[in-house]
Amino acid sequence: MKKIVIMSDNHGDMNILTDIKVLEDDADYYIHCGDSESYQLRDLDEFAAVKGNNDWSLDLPQTARLDIEGRHLLITHGQFFGYFDREKKMLDFLKKYNGDVLISGHTHMPLVKEENGLWLINPGSTSWPRGGSKRSYAVMTIDGTNVDVRIKTLE
Image (cartoon, rainbow, N blue to C red):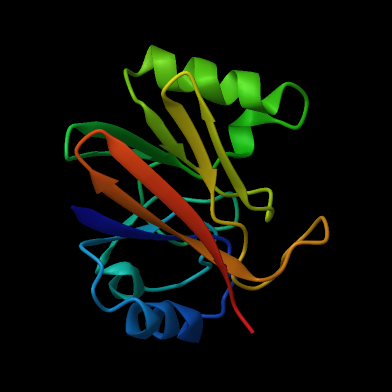
């Protein structure tokens, strides 16, 4: 079983990266879905990280892929999915790139949805939540074919 901690959209609050690593110090992987707004790549050293639309100074990829316990995770910030038919575009992206878990941010609103074995995960924002949500991140466990995702809120 592997534990994956996912966060996004901290928008310059670099202390929250450390805080979450302390809260979830038993994680096997840490994922950052972009918009850290860090000026130093070393802030994201322990993260599989992608570039968000506000990460102007970081040389990060637009997408990343992790294969964990037989699951194919695709990571992207999510700004290119738009707001209309967003979930359909996300599922199409997963199918196009042979993934079964899409992890993205951008909307600042948590999402955990499984449809026909395909997962859409957005941890929300650790700093600027939207849509009535609270500051949050996600914890995913993968144990063979079993996937469990929980949104955790921050006080």
